[in-house]
Length: 266
Image (cartoon, rainbow, N blue to C red; front, top):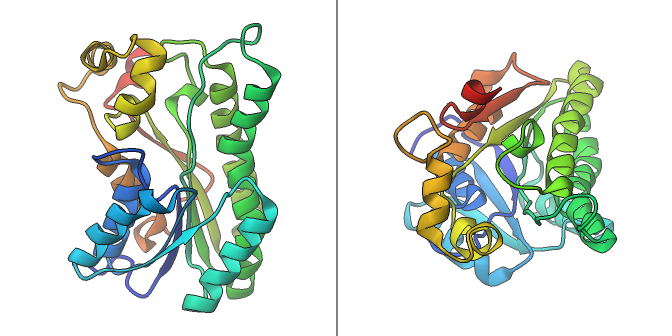
């Protein structure tokens, strides 16, 4: 156990996982707790949180699971108040909820467009809306929003709503960073790309490779200059740095975690 986040209270959304392995939220909860944070772990699916809670508590970390739909203001308000009631404050917010849906502007339905914007962008907006007043009262805080390389470049398939919403997450982060800088509240974005998370098996392979997981992994690896594919732990470590006091002079920027893919193709 470390102390980079000692005595800090961290809300992490999407802290469960859609399957076995290292999703971004699960890995972040584990790493933040390892470094001394008290983790308030939020997910829509309570069963998805079970493995995360077990993982953290097995190492002596502190974690409180909470079930909520972060696309709904009433539930976001309740979860933030529950965190305050449990721990008395919020020092770190990691907005990690997200997912993709294939389709360009012609073939994607309006309903699926709306769902993607709500899921990937509105969720981060609502969490900031209800957490920021508490951070402002403390005059301190760190927000880390999880975007995607799809928000800054083409990544191999038409997913216009996902790409647009993730680009929105980046600009949301910049606006929050500048508006709240005078109150010593920082806001940054992590931009992961082509990671091997549980979502590859449960969702992406069916969307892009006819269910062939190995084929999809090979396609993704071919875009990465480094000779291996990262996973949720790499996102978590980037978020840990940005949430910690080591990044005290960093705000309004993005940290790309993609093995060099964007650098090669930009």
